[in-house]
Length: 140
Image (cartoon, rainbow, N blue to C red):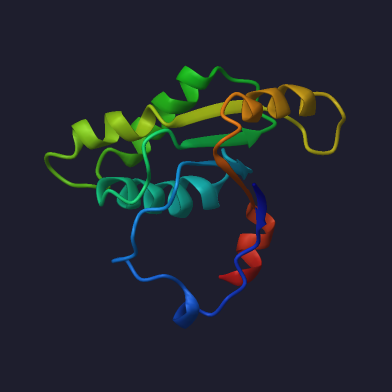
């Protein structure tokens, strides 16, 4: 199943932190190297992971134009997220980063889309959610 997520609901309609975990999913974040993703979305996802609300087999795939290896992207995230869970959160951060992948793709060009589609088809049983940071910005 495929979803395109544009968060435009008032905060009162959002799920509570005590929400149950969801089925395994692939979350594709366009603008994955941007400020919104790094300062808001990924820390929030790390908290959901630490609370057991991200199912095993889920993937978080960050998309941006920056040509960098996935390992370098995860290293950047590690330094930016290391204090999010506080003392003792290093093992959870390591496990969370195992879910994270990065792909360089310019959304305005044709190149790269077939590679993303192939990546998503690797786990076709997962639900696919696409998050566009421009859409999320409009809801803040």
